[in-house]
Image (cartoon, rainbow, N blue to C red):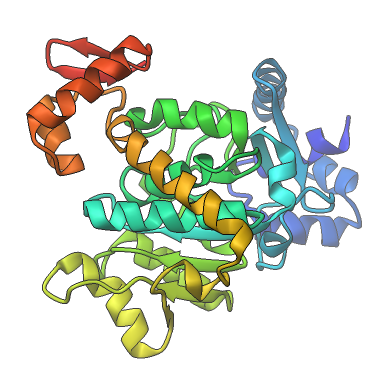
Length: 340
C-alpha cells in the first residue's frame, strides 16, 4: 500500500489523532510498521479506499506535513494535522498567510473594513485565511477574491473539503475553489459536529503568520481562535469598536490586555506607495459595486433586507437588482432574490 494510504489508515482509525499518530510512528520505527500494528479492520480500510476514490473524482488532493506544499506556519504547531486535504490551488498554501476572523453578525462597517483589509493583503502577496462562516469570515474571503490574480484566499472548514457549509456560502465556496483553496483535516464527505468547529478554529490560528480579529463577543468562536493564536505565539491585531456594542468586547479586551496590537487600517501593515494608489481606487469602486451582490446568497433575501444591509433605500437598489438579474448573476423568486 502507498504511504498516503497508510497515513490515512492510521488517522481514520477511531481513537487516533495527530498525537497518537506520531507516537505510533515513533514507537514502531516508521509509517508502514505503524499501520501494520493496528488491528486488521476491514471497515476502516474500505472507508479509506472509498475516500481516496471520492477525492480523485472531485479533484481533491492530499498534502502531508513532510511535503513542501504543507503550510509552514501550521507545521510549527504541536500536533498539527499530519495530512490535510485540499480542493483548489495547492500553490495558495505556499504563500505568507494572514487570518482574519470575527463575528457572524458583523456590522456593515465591520464587513467593509474586513473586506478592504483582506484585499490589501491579497494585493501584497498574502493569502487570506478564514473559516468561511457568514459575516466577517465571508467578508475576508470576498475581499481577497476582489483582488486580481489567483491563490488569494484559504477556507479552513470543519467538515470534508467537499462539504459546503453554511449553504448561504455555496457561491463563495466555488469561487474559493476556483481562485484559492479549501482545506480540511477531516475525511472527504465528512459532515461536521460542534466540536469540529473548535478544531477548525485551532487551525485557522495555526496556519497564519499573523491574525486579525474583527468584531467578536467575548465568548465567541473567534475569541477562541484568538486564544489559540496567542498560545502559538502569533502576531495578533484587533480592530477596535464602540464599547457599547457587545461585538466590540472581544477585540477591545485583547487590545486593553496587551495581547493584541490595535489595528486601525491598511497603513498598519503596508506603507502607501504610488503604484498602489490606482489599484486601491479600482478596488474601492469594485467593492462598492459588489456590495449588493455579496449580500445575496442561496437563501432568498427580500428587497427590504438588502436595502438595510447596503444602507440604501429600496428605490435606490431596484435598478442595481435589475442590472444584476440581466447579467445572470441573481434571480428573483417569491421570497426575494437568490444568487445563481
